[in-house]
Every structure is written in C-alpha cells, then in structure tokens.
Image 1 (cartoon, one colour):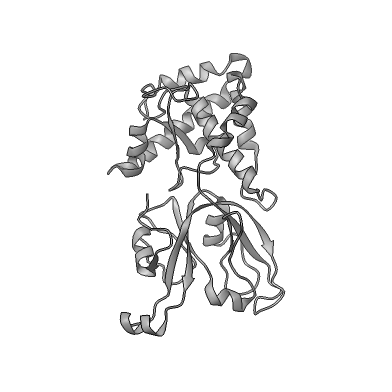
Image 2 (cartoon, helix red, strand yellow):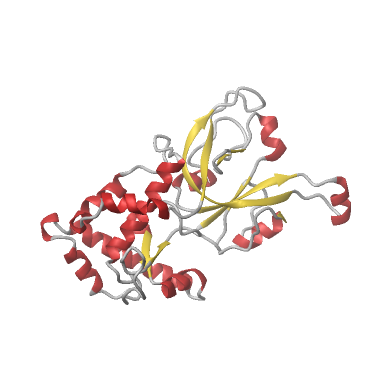
Length: 304
C-alpha cells in the first residue's frame, strides 16, 4: 500500500515522490499519484513556539493541528478541508531538525520525517492557545486514530443488525450520522464500533457476491458468511468508518486489483458507479418489498 517503515526517517523529497506532489512548504501534502491519501508532518519546534504542539495520546491516537499561518485558521482552506472531510487516509510523520553532523554529511540542511503510522480522521475541534505568537487565535485540531481492524466488535454489530429486512434502516443509520464534525468527535471505542458496523453492512449488502465481478465468495468464513473483503473507495487504507456508498465488499482477487493493478484508477471509477447504483436501489426500495429485491436487481447488473 505504501513503502514507509514505522520509525524510519525520510527526507521530504521522498514524501513528495510517493504522492506525486510539488508542494514547497506545507504540513499537509497531497498529490495525484495517491488521491486517497494525505501526508501530515508534525509542526516541530515552530508549533511549540507558536503556542501549540501536535500531541501523541496514550491510546495511540494523535492531536494534529490544522494549517494557517496567522489569525484564526480557516476550516475551508484546501488542507483543512481535506482533513475535515475524513475521506482520506493519513500517513503521519513527526519532524526532526538535522544535527550539524548530518548537515555536513548531506551537504545541506533538510528536516527529517519519521513515519509514525497510518491514521484516519475521527473528528476535530477548535483550540485557542493561551501563549505563544498564536495566543488567542482560533485553531483547529484533528483527532487522528490509527487504522487497524475492528473484528472484535463484529459480533456486537451482528447481533444489533441480524435481520436482513433491516437493510434500509441500517443504511439510513449510517448515512444519517454526521461524521468529521466538531459535534461528532469520536472516542476510540466509538470509532472502532462504527468501523465494524460499516464493514458488516457492506458484507450484508453484498449477500455473499463480490460487488465487482459478481462471482460468489471463494469460501465460507468462520462466521458462516461468504468471505469478502471490504474496500474503501476514497482512501488508501481499508479500515475505519465511511459512508455506505464509499465501501465495497470484494472477493480477494478484485480487492488486490483495486489496490495494485495497472488499471486501478479505471477500475475504481467503475466500482464507484456500481456501488452508487446499488445504494440508490436500496434507497428507492420500499421497506415492504424486503431487502432481497435490492440484492436481486444489483446482481443482475454488470460492474459497468
């Protein structure tokens, strides 16, 4: 998925190359090569002098401060808006100033960035420093939660949504939640539970049939369902919450194609249209008709 090794340091050039970016200076980097990904680098000494600092928390999550040089930070500037959307994976790096010896050995100055892991945004809130040059400015800090599976919560989710006729209520429940807003700042447990719920929903919607190639799941999983893997259409990572129209349940072969094939961009476009059509069919269906009619119509369509 990405070439970075946890704890290893990299020059800024390597980060830009991965994303295909030419950004000169920014703590938030994006590019055309990996549209589902942002690279965020910590503020280092500059942030501390300004009165705030990106902070690692005891549960493995981070507070990461948004972009803006002076005055109140705008939530709708390009970098902050991308973070606030919660639609992209975050590759997070902490920043270190080079030593005099390193500058001499490398023949020039350049900050070093240590990879701290892959994260998703789980909400954000306002923060006003009480000291430093940004004292009194309204800043935005984003809660970054590490990506990892939420399989341990699946049983709880399955018990809550065990009746197939509830697919419409389940869809409405997931769509209706405001995510990535100040009010929706999630705890780690809430975030993991919602991630499990979204994954379970996608598999339930697919009913044992890959939502790309329309072939039956290759084998039966331990929970007695057809084995399918959940793919996020707008992220580098496949963990963490998302909207129903942004996740697909795929067979392992199609899942690898979505990430590693030469035609992954074209495949992603086809898949987005396919999932949107399925979701619209569920929305249009009246609850009295039952969920199976949605699945039947969806299975009759090709991935294009």
